[in-house]
Image (cartoon, rainbow, N blue to C red):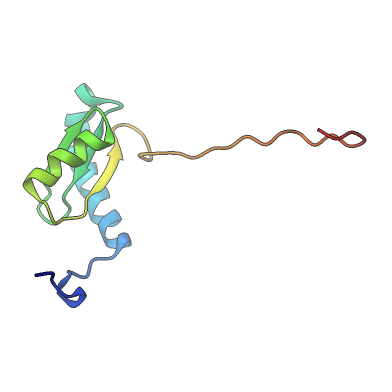
Length: 97
C-alpha cells in the first residue's frame, strides 16, 4: 500500500545544499586528489558519500545504501555538478536568416 504524502520527510532543497556543501568541504581534499572530474553523491544526514565516474553511477551507488533518500550531487573539483549554455544565432538586419 502506498504511503500518504504526509508521511514523507520534510527537507528543503536549501537545507540539502547547505548540509551537502559542508560535507563536501570536509572531504574535498581527500577525494579531489584521485577523483577530480568524477561525481560524488552525498547523503546529507549521515555524511556518507558515494563516488562515480558519472552522475548516474554515483547516484546508483548511493541508492543501494539509502533507497529513499535525496542526495546532494557535486562534480569533484568544480563549483557545480552541471552547467547549461545555449547558442543564439547573431541577428542580421536587412536579410532573413
